[in-house]
Image 1: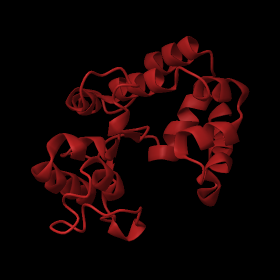
Image 2 (image 1 turned 90 degrees about the vertical axis):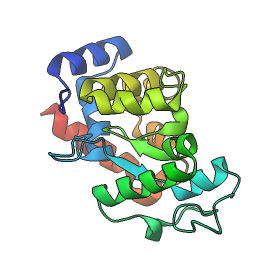
Image 3 (image 1 turned 180 degrees about the vertical axis):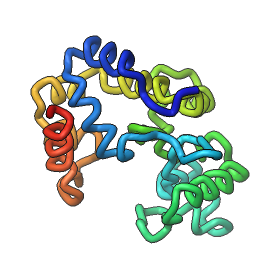
Length: 191
């Protein structure tokens, strides 16, 4: 297992999408500082567990018994504050509803939400999670499968960071200056 995306995978992915490698690297930089794994000895994929998604997927069934894991609205204060802590939250949620928990986390280098597993080319969320554990090139492959459609691919081709940001990160992307951060990261990867 390689924890670093290979140059060959970057090049092939960019060629298949018709985009510059720098565009793909920009997304990786903004989403995960360019690495999709916790440091050794863990080597688990980076995850961010989203309790409001878990709430939605489980119809609020665990709101009363696990209020730190299941809640109706996004709440930044619920995050653990560390990569290891997010794994602890995900593991606790998996004890309640395994697949819903996997679908409620964002995964790896590109922080793809687990519920997007079909759009990433997987039959099950468990297959999606295993691919993210398998290596960095597999994380890139899932991302490429996910964005190989409008508006993602077209926005990267034209470097329309606002359109990509809205599609990938949601309508509130400007609050975090997501589009500006993508443009800056792209510029850094071009040089």
